Image 1 (tube, rainbow, N blue to C red):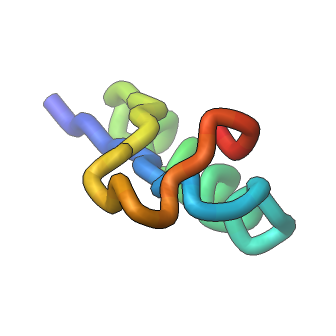
Image 2 (spheres, one colour; image 1 turned 180 degrees about the vertical axis):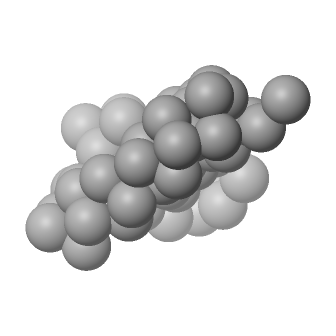
Length: 53
């Protein structure tokens, strides 16, 4: 089973680049009859902000 993920870090607001990446990943997951998982990575504690999550 195919499982893809989109995992931006909350160090800034989402932008069109994220949307493009999400669209491509969603298309690939759908073509493979798999899943796409959205996960917010908060590994960079110094730059992560709650308003970006």
